Length: 311
Image 1 (tube, helix red, strand yellow):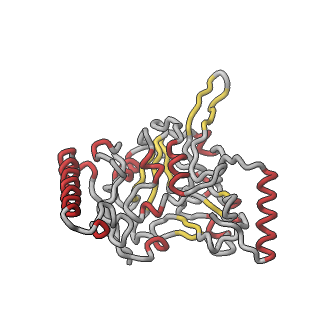
Image 2: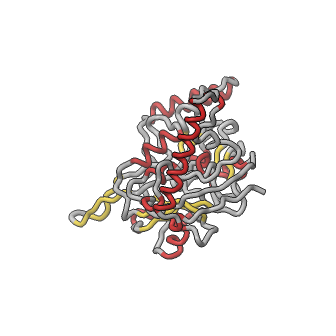
Image 3: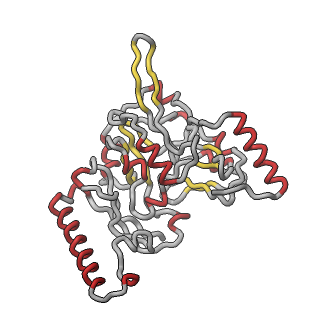
């Protein structure tokens, strides 16, 4: 059984405690530096953050985040030694996301952070924020609608994958095994939210993973951490004391395309009926002609046994 995150309540951490910890870290750092100058080998001096991605990550939080300035976003701290965590996820957890459209300003910081964190090629996106026009002239208005994989309770993408390359972890995160995927596109067509695409570099299916590599280390997804308006929250839907879950239970929330039966775990506040049933699709800067060329080359590579180029 996988180790479970041990949550710390951000509200219980005041600025005094935060500064106390910061001063403690600073003192420890100065002490280590002083020891190094009096004869310790520099290569043997343990540097702050050496264990950040080791077997026992502890108390990892968004970099430079003051608890009082965190927009009430969930901050996780846990310890785990389970080597299968990336494959299986956390037992008993059910990760989800809440997006408050009243706070989204369409700055695209989340889009840029996602690309940087996950090395996404130019022209395709794991998360994006389209600017949409609502209503009929002269009664029109513009709105922003952050989009990403919904990590559904009943993901249709898993059922149609002929290679078994996409699966759902115990904590609900839907993943893709890029070594098994051969880019047939069945899952892309099966997703009712247009959240999947064929990566033009790897020639495999691609999508948002809730930044599972960060969640497994106790960090928030990149899009949540960088949201300047605090419009995105991430948390455990199985935990009634989680700040995000409390808001999901208390606010009037909506989901995209509720009639599909997929039961998405990305929730919205302020979603209109028009956007709910007809959300804008995923953008792409790759022309249809180029996509056809890429797909034909990929099919030829598979037929001849030639491996696709990977970054």
